[in-house]
Length: 501
Ligand code: AMP
Image (cartoon, rainbow, N blue to C red):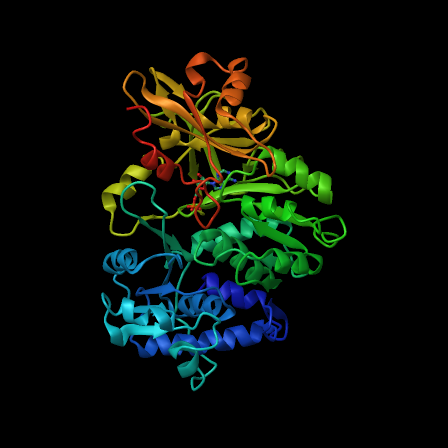
């Protein structure tokens, strides 16, 4: 018997007339229409000789059709390989060389560039609005039925390349079972149901917008308001129609700046979820004061799907990413993988059906990422409180060693963020001839406020041990972030590497 993510999505949607996606300027797309279109796309891919286990690389702007293409890959048994729309041809040629996809789907305007490193006859195009390109044009002639591949939960569904702050980007291999089990866990934890309407403004090349949002919705037969990207006016217009919003922290901070965000606009929402980057405790509190809603923060990563979540019913603690999800084991470990005492800082390690099987064609890196007992070493440092709530302290490689002392940037960032006039901060270690690394703070002032290096250092002096005090405070207009709202500390380390020399 075949049992895979696609068969489960089909089973969850017995009513073909139920609305799946509502996108601005487009007619609503029903589940029945989405399945029919996915069959047509699967035929197009099969005509290009894509077979189960083959990779299909996709660099496409967000559109209903781009999401349907993911379904087409699932039912064909192809391994879906979504690529960040910001990637340049140089970066894309690395992914194509590494993953060796059978087909490359891209925007018609990128076709020529992709053909510079990929066989032109195996390029399929999809227009940025989803309504043009060879995929949709040729699909019109295709049947709306498809003989789905006979797959099990162990078969691979997708490869997602990690953003890779150091070294080459690695392809995380995710099975149907990894994706299905995680979606099930989240649906249960968040009480996700067919009556939900999700406001979706995340990109769909990343685990958050594609798997957390997409799979939870499709497996619940729920509906999405599917926006091409985050846009304040569109978000404010969509909020009253929605019951759930999933966002990165920057969605929340940008919405807070808009006076139209209030209890009235959010009256139908039952759950605000944040993840992919740390949500400031202050944002959590401001949001609560303005809308009456406590944002639920959760933690996950490309390799593992979601690991922890604040509870639906119990306390949603600001600054914490919550409790281990059902079926997921989370431990805080020392350098040998031994659990540390509660309250101590250590490496977050996870094990469960959500965790990927390894990195594509990188057996050594895959082996090094797991403990002998099967726990995956996330690279995130964290701690748990007496109730089991996990807090992330930072990435392991963000830890600063200055004068032989270990310093966790999060502690210093928390104090700086609480100072009057400070909007946000990022603390990094920069090469320093005396100390090895010098603690350096990058600070952004709140709109209309001014902050100074001397003022910040003076304010911190009473609160922090001397070795933790920033040696320099640099005031910036904004912190460098990637599309998922993650602060790019590696860029700051590179740009300011000679600060102390
Ligand atoms: P990605 O693989 O791009 O999803 O990035 C995963 C990383 O994002 C994790 O390893 C964490 O460092 C970070 N991350 C995800 N969710 C959170 C969160 N709620 N708070 C802090 N960091 C997070």
